[in-house]
Amino acid sequence: MSEGKPGLDLAIVGGTVVDGRGRPGSRADVGIAGARIVSVGKLGEGTRRTIDASGLVVTPGFIDVHAHDDLAVVQSPRLEFKVMQGVTTDVVGNCGMGVAPVSPAYRRYYETFLASALGEGADFTWRTTSEYYEAVERAGTSLNVACLVPHGLLRLAVMGMEPRPPSDSELAEMKDLLEEALAAGGIGLSSGLIYPPGIFATTAELTELCRVVASHGGLYASHIRDEGERLLEAVGEAIRIGEEAGVAVEISHHKAAERANWGKVAESLRLIEEARARGLDVTVDVYPYTAGSTVLGVLVASALRDEADPDEILIASAPHHPELEGKTLEELGRLRGMPPLEAARGLLQEDPSVVAIVFSMAEEDVRRVMRHPVAMFGSDGLPSTGGKPHPRLYGTFARVLGTYVRQEKVLTLEEAIHKMTALPAAKHRLAGRGEIALGYYADLTIFDPASVADVATYQEPRRHPAGIRYVIVNGEVIVDNGRHTGKAAGRVLRAGR
Ligand SMILES: [Zn+2]
Image 1 (spheres, rainbow, N blue to C red):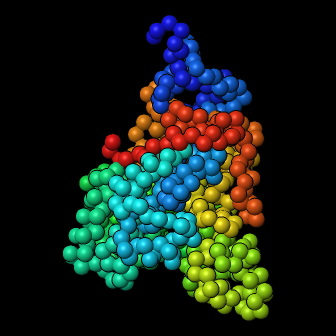
Image 2 (spheres, helix red, strand yellow):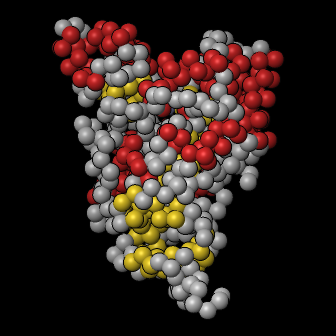
């Protein structure tokens, strides 16, 4: 080191380090040079900048394994709603949907089905996964982005909306597209088996595609075929695909939806434990809320089947009817002077892209899933451009720390941090991330354990959490004393690079 030249770019001193591995936190200083952590413990060298973390907790940056920010990272790459809750890496391409690869059939599908969830005004300047990654890099994002290859987009490209199994040549074509996307750095395949066109996929089709994923060492993440009455069969299908194809499995936003199914997660988690005992790497993710959110069309279709309570379905965004945002289907029915579901069907004819929130889970189930050692966190937030999105978009990670660690003591701080960092990094092949250790990337979150809390509500969802003081991505300070700096330090995390 030359004289007078500091050896560190950034020193974080006086904080309690919780390193992501689940071990008890301890007082330590963290030294950063460039994008990497170069010392943990006592810092001897000079530094360009020091952050005083006295009274604060220093952890690896949080990893949102279930993001739908595929378009947002290009359109609004500062991604305040994620970064301000301490997230430093987003995994996109979930639920079999996303923004690459783009095909002519997909463009129509996007406008009618996906735009309300992922964002309006997409001008697809890319076609392949590789070109999408380049677009993300050109846009300059504030956090790191890793991408699953969405099964629905492969199917759209090859077979459009055909409600049938693929022919041999169609399957071969889907495999080629998948191969190309994985070779470009996709971390695995995702499916959404309640949404068209994923709903038309057979187990055999998914298994064949997963063999390609296995050859790349990737994972299969699934929004399974049924999260209600046939939850156990649907978990069984995901496990079977994993075992037959030899691929690691992630069950997305694991839950038992609808009152009649509450408690079933005890059995589904047992199926997962049994599969793990047989040698399958199967894990789950969960968001810390008893309500879910998706497009209203899907909810209305299942509400007819399950006789859902119209008081438990909330309109989140309705681009052509913003005055209805925040209202329940019960209220919609009263406004329109007709039964709630009939009113909902009418609304969908005027505005097919309505997104809704549904209170469908038991608190005890959410806690049971979150406590499970193989559960990690995914927000499932929908960054739709208008309306009142589910508060999980802004609040997920702070809510775990405030509500489920500090207040309810469902998890210890160390357990919760492990589930937000090292556990998802290992599963999603994010090499060199998810821990505070020498040589690891300096993705860090620094927060006040006494005040960290989510403040986003169903009626006022666009509120940043309290208590998140600093967020550091690849060694650069993105949130500085509670303020977003606008820096674009995020990288695309290509698998195998
Ligand atoms: Zn999903």
